[in-house]
Image (cartoon, rainbow over all chains, first blue to last red; front, side, top):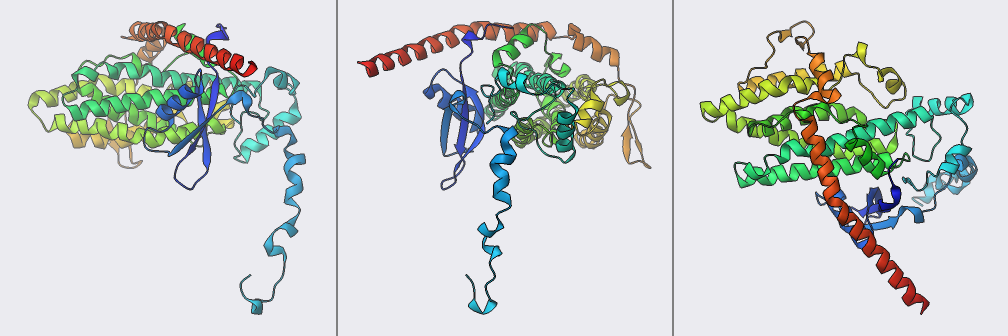
Length: 97
Length: 333
């Protein structure tokens, strides 16, 4: 194993592909600070006009849900069909609602 | 999220061992249902190791692959060709970085992968150990070598590991220009003087066999294939991909008016496939073992780039630490 101390930190890269859309995760870069992270992200992920804006976030600053908890986190959402508009019967005569 | 930082070892140890049948069964059920496996999901250790090996070697190939082409940067015949070549080489560097980034989500560091490359512990594609002797080689590399890479990478877009599959989608989108610009170089040469056409023929004579070796050993001799197919890391076998590549490229060679350097090459009307001669697997093994024409040169160039760039990395890190310390003391004051 090599000495890890000179490895610069990992930054996650998010790109807004078009005006009006939200930023999407595209990958990561190594950089020693924010400026370098933005520069590297530009060089690696936007060589063909893929973006109009870049966000970089230190990977270690991201909190993520545990895949083991997927059921308890997301299962309760799937059986509440009354949260969807199609659950409710409205007579056709009423028209679009 | 796709980070090394989140795959902390404590978490992995807490995971049930690979021989936990229930975990493994659940994992395989997801694979069979064509679900993607993401970095923080449970996966068997051998799946993780296989992916680290494959993705890092794929990344290494992109990085080493810049070297034979870089040989012609200053000698491209026109500014148009030079701009194209520079853009292509920059793409290869980018592809290497997408792939290193995908491998890092599995818990291996960039530095460790770099270390494995320059110490010879990790391999890269055998094809990049051949020299680029003429300008025509830049055309042939784009047409055949990138063409073979595309054949191999398209099914990888459906690979079961999410970050690898997503990196492949980006790579494939960009790779198409590489193949077209290569074929265009050969078209220009084949429509040129006799000398230029000879140069193109000489190039295909040298690159044809190494290119079809890129698909790896025959299915009957491929050690990792079965398991990789079951895990849906690999979707199409070596021999099937090779045949697909040959069927696509032979007519393209004929269009250029070039001969494929294989006296046994013939079209089978019944199967609709081109049948080819015996591949020299001894040459393949020799190149993989480090005895190809340029193995030493490639690793020496990579090692030198790594060593020469070290001070930049160190200076950037020192600068960042100093800036951070200064900001912290300002805040405290």
